[in-house]
Length: 217
Image (cartoon, rainbow, N blue to C red):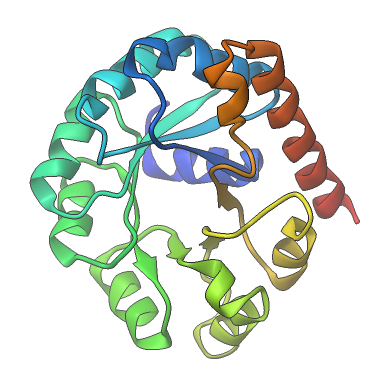
């Protein structure tokens, strides 16, 4: 998929970004495919994995003929961002706001999703050229924080991550989230350990169903 706006639209359409943290590098392709079959079309490989660039490339190759988008998460500096982008990442997320990471993404026409919590961080990130704001950790402040940010800042796209589950996802969308990020609440690590791709697929489907129900309410 080409163009930042197209990727942002795809993230919004997906409604959820699956955070793949600590999954086996040699199995990430089949895991990503099972997640996709369960309805998840946006996947994030965290850059704290030793082989994160290889894993991004594997997913990109495995799902390259689909409408899926793959990105990198936990990106703390510009060199890591560039390595992820070279591997095929179409969006880059971080738990914090680092202007050099946003700049690297903009130079490569890749979607930048820095982590923010306060209005000051949000304004600084948007001024630097961020495309979407990652509210992290969302569980610390809850869904109402989205509306609190939208009040003075307008309808900036916000993706809450950290503590989002099928049980509370409706609250985040009602508050104005454009999409959510989810890890263990979406990715069934026990099923992965048991080599149960049907379980991975079903867990993904249940979360996607919750997202769809929340957005249609």
